[in-house]
Length: 313
Image 1: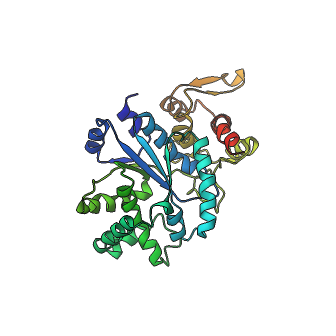
Image 2: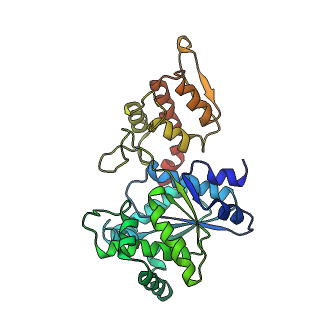
Image 3: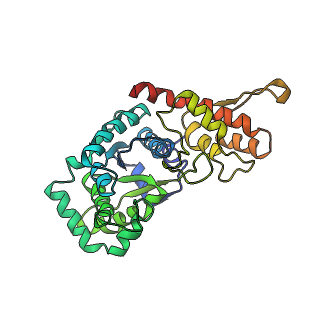
C-alpha cells in the first residue's frame, strides 16, 4: 500500500486531492487532530486515531491537540476537570498506537499574545452566521448557543496555523470548521490546510453514536463487556448502515491482517478473510450468518483493544 492509498483509505473526502498529492512529495509534512478531553474514549474516537496512525506511517509528523480550552468553551466541564481528563485521554491514545507523536495541551499555547491576536483578526472576518453553522454538528446545546461556542471554530482555525499543521484530520462533522480555516488563514499569511475527513459511524444499535445512549464500545470495557455488546448489536442482512460491518471496515482490518469466522463444520467450518472487501462480499451473498459475524467482531475488538487496556491500568 503506497502513502496516498494509506492516507485516503476509509475517508469520506480530502480537500483537496491535488493539495494532498503535492504535500506527500514534501520531505517534512505535519498533520494535526484535536480532541476535546472526554471520560470515555470509544470507537468513535478510534476512527480518527486510526487515520493519524496511517498518516504517521505515510511519513507525517503528528500533533495531537488535547483541547482543554475548547472543551471548556463547549460547556464540557470546568478547566480542572477537562485537564484531568486530558491526561487520561493521552494515555488512551498512546495505548491505541499514537506513540512518538507530539501531544499539546491547548491552554499551554492558546493564551499567548500571538494566538489571541490571530483569533481576534479572524473574528473580524468570520460572520456570526458562518461561525454558528460551523458549530451546528459539534456544539453542545446548540439550540441556545453561547458566545463561547462562536469562538470555538475561530480558535480551531488558529490552532491549525500556530501548530504549523499542513493538514488537519477530523470527522466529517468538522468540515464546516475546516473550510473556515482554508478560506481565512491565507488572508493572514498562513497556508490553507489539507483537510482529511473520516466518516461518523453508527452506534451499536444502528443509530447515532451517543454517550447518553451507551451504544458504543469504550476502550475501558472489559473483554466480556465487548463480547456482550457485539452480540446484542444491530446487524441486518444489508450492507448499508450496518454497524458491525462498519467496525470491521474502520477498526478491525486497518489493524489486523486477517480475521477468521469460526463456525462448526456443519455450518461450513471456519472461514478466513484477508480484506474487508472480501468479507463484505461474502456477507452480502448470505454466506456469513449475522451471529457468526458479531462473534468474530467481538473477538477481534478484544484483541485490538487489549494493549490500551493494559497500558492505562
